Length: 137
Length: 151
Image (cartoon, rainbow over all chains, first blue to last red; front, side):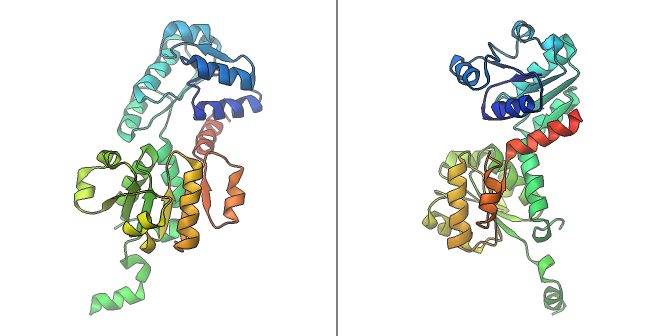
């Protein structure tokens, strides 16, 4: 499995996936983050731009079943997922999206799973306090 | 008159719920908009006035989303924004410790009935549940989605 982006969410996901027995490679273009994560998990980070074919190939994307894009930009996550999907035939691609309108677009563009965390949080809030919120007017 | 009687018969449906959201970043702003669109009155508090620019102007103009500049960890800021009257308080800044301090201030000093904090650490859920605070871990929600798809 490939995770693009060594932010806090990317690192958490990597930790969980490795704990469940998956082989994980991460991609980040920040050498400090690379050092930090390599210290945590052993050498698993490929240094470079995850939205490029060359770096994805170096990370072994052609052998991956899943690519998760956790960069800060929706556009970068789209590109990383589309390269994985259409160039390396990765079975499942997941993109984080910070913007609800773009999340919809990413879905239309063939990204398998688009996750807008704020959406999930709102659903969770509504289920936690369901009886007290106004549902429909 | 008929209206008044209905109010008494079904008070929970008649009154809009009031919600306070601390932090107008990527999470807070979207939570505020969605809760507002589903019929709640939302107060958003952020230290940085520029952060409010992401909120849809029609919601702000109709006062469906009310903005207030202030520090969510200070009682004076919260009172200035009218937080003492809300039914639900959501602390959604990027910093877990800030959310937990702000949340406890709201729950224990201002007696807000429901308080939710965003914290990226599931270990803290039971600890703060004991203190009357509900914790949501955004990373865990993402992990649930991944797990569902992989199974």
